[in-house]
Length: 321
Ligand code: SF4
Image 1 (cartoon, rainbow, N blue to C red):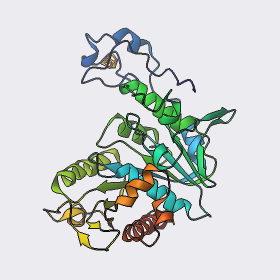
Image 2: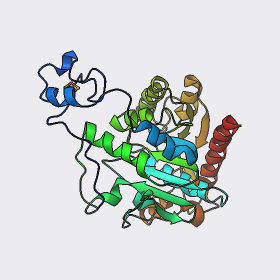
Image 3: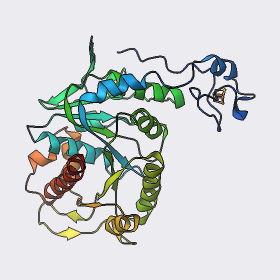
């Protein structure tokens, strides 16, 4: 197991209004008075993060960086990330990296068929695990002693690992780095948007399901992106209707009571990349770590996913021209 950098130097959890132990006011702010970490934070070096130039240097060989977000858990974000990774890697001209930043619930390794792999370290950094010639991935899953281990980390420790992921993974030349994040707006989102501010994020793809309870949280996610200065590339509506793999009949499972993702995208002034129907074979493919797109290329879900990927590439590559 690779030793994880000792990022957590604090002796107690940060209180609610902590300004951040690496901030200039650490140890001096109102919230620091009475905090058990006051002496530690007062003595830590402050000012610009010395690791940011290292992250910029490391990621200078990555053309496009893309976050995959969802307001809510259970909308199929990681499933979609895995299919997006397979779809992009189907173009042999492209080099693709997938980074699993869902530290407490890493699922990409299973979906990409590499959960039993471990990461190797060389002089040039951590080597990604390759699931295809042009598709590498990195996840905390590879560093756990066993697959059922829970990761019970908070604040600084998570931030330290994310920084290490961005700074130390030897991706080589990549066309796309796809970063799968946890649901909601968490420490992971704040960290990754801060660390990548200088090296640049092309934008975020937001995944939702059609029902209002999921759409409500999309509004918050889009608001977070705006506050963090991350461009919202577009919205994908997942689990949008069910197409029976036997008879081809269509039915609605999650009802779009308020107009669904398309209407929300219009309201928020963001692009709508399309709707992907439910297909039980997607879950099976992910469980076995295989590409649904390769197994069922003619299914309506595969066609819908490829349409979304085309729109996404147009948006990213068009903006870069
Ligand atoms: S002393 Fe450190 S941990 Fe405590 S509130 Fe201040 S910055 Fe946060």
